[in-house]
Image (tube, rainbow, N blue to C red; front, side, top):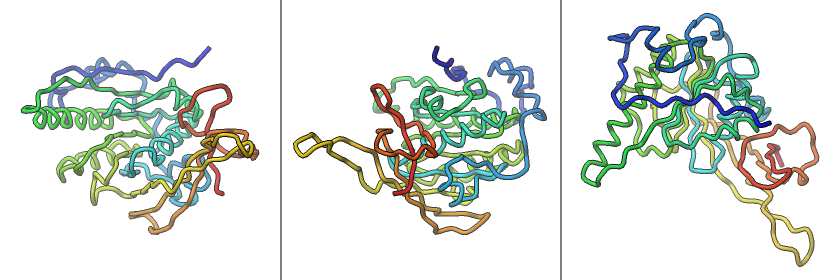
Length: 287
């Protein structure tokens, strides 16, 4: 039987209270329906760095810091979500709770399951998108962004999370300094590692680490001279663009393979790339 999906909650249309103005811990528990997380002291570890289990990435950055914001940036299909899913998987397997704030509605529990995550320890926040006319689209999008950011801050203020992933999707502009500052302070108070995913940098100087992902080229192969070309996978590159806690400028190349038969090394780590058919899975290796 397939594993149950990650816990999903639908936020109300009204803006939730922020910074303890009117909300109590009991109200937050009722809102998120995961009361065990809000003990604060039982599942969060505030020492050390979080690693993802991919040796090349862990060697490149050493891990992401607890109580700080880290960013993974890059275009679509550059490996951002794959790396984030590996961090979430490794964190949940260590017995900690992970929050995943899904702005674009692209979260796939099956992919996280493929990465080996304990879905019972994943809290997934999704948002309803109301259709808007062209005239009101800008105002509506700004209102949605404010609501989504408040949800992320509420999650951090509740406590008890080892990692909070915030997927900003294809956001075109960085957050305001005030919004980035609030998010950084919430991360520091909670002790949780915050991992922001976006096409470009969103938190500016408030991010302790920025890992930039890029697509290098696709790989194809043929089983015979006249056989059709088959897609093997994608070669991607990870570069440390910013690192307040260590060196920056280092790079590493990874190969995300679709066909498990194309790589025989059993020590490779499964990653959540999408595919169809029997035996489809994903691997990471340096070639």
